[in-house]
Length: 501
Ligand SMILES: *[C@@H]1O[C@H](CO)[C@@H](O)[C@H](O)[C@H]1NC(C)=O
Ligand SMILES: *[C@@H]1O[C@H](CO)[C@@H](O)[C@H](O)[C@H]1NC(C)=O
Ligand SMILES: *[C@@H]1O[C@H](CO)[C@@H](O)[C@H](O)[C@H]1NC(C)=O
Image (tube, rainbow, N blue to C red):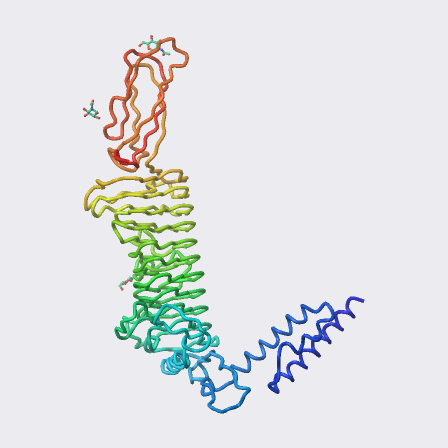
């Protein structure tokens, strides 16, 4: 019974679909024409029908030659706005990668950028002042692999709402070593504050062929790099320079194709992602080979869900390097630092939490001008080999940290490594008039204790002594009493706050 119903339903659907298709082919198609069938419970049919029509239309637009992209001058009333999908093979790009497709793809991009009117057309969608809305113009790489010998640099700046998707770009053997496969920069100074706005690069595989980098984003706003696989770069997989809000999501970057434990790891040299700008986000990204996974020299960037297993610390690599001493403003959360750690120079406002450090990976706080302020390293997990590696190191080779305030390193859990913290709690027992608690094993900073709390318990003794904190030098707490007494002393110290705060 149900099968029969389903069949009828299917037949009806096919009939309606074909009818609509025919109507559509003749150019009189209107979605309202199927509204007559709304007597029954057919929302599903309608939805499928719509999807079917859309797929048909899209196919139709694919088969249009590129010349029909511009509106025909004829007076025909049936002229629709041209679709803005540019199939690169229509421009002669070679999807097998055998011949050079640079010119063909650049021509497609150039046509996409030529969309008549831009934001001055009737759509009324203005973006940043002076930036033309391309209305979602779309370069479709059609699942091909294209060899290019020059960077795909967009032809003019001051454009927005444009995307490149769905294929592989490979640098040729003569690709310039300082180039990027996709280059969102200005070839000349156009005086615009921003080069581009809302550019989307999605579902791309970029092979830099050990010549240059993957994607360069210069002075742009609201750029999306999504589901990209970027390999064989020698400079940066992705370089973001100036601008803001480049969102790099769900992507994979590696200089060499490897899945860890690579024999050549010692020689990894490039940088996965280089953020030389503010307000960017890296979310759910894997960096599987590079000397430095992520280099940050702009402020207010956030790094989340990143797995770095690029060059191990033991070979001189770094997972995330924060090279902006004095005002860092970086959040690193929910990330996985795998045999490679984090280095932060003079961190000021830095938050690292909910991360997992594996294989003796640790955090280095490196003094440049001796400033460390507003740093939270909390609620992380560290796992190591039992060699006694500290979870947080101070690099004071240039000079000591002298300006320390609001530093909290606490509540991290540790297996096979040595805990370091700015807050510590211990207790000792003794029979006498002096109790010493040495916190050097636990505390991060040498000879620095700002706050001490202690309790002296003489449970079981009838003596009621006077007692006091006598010394905090070198992270050793000394408590003394006026008479000898068997006592337990509980001490809590904090070295993360300055005496002024
Ligand atoms: C690293 O590179 C050097 C010089 O290019 C080469 O001699 C050496 O064999 C490489 N080592 C590994 C492990 O690949
Ligand atoms: C503590 O030391 C004193 C002598 O210094 C001794 O008389 C006393 O029994 C000791 N108390 C305990 C609980 O060991
Ligand atoms: C505190 O202890 C250090 C040695 O740890 C000592 O040099 C210093 O004189 C002591 N300070 C006081 C006030 O006793």
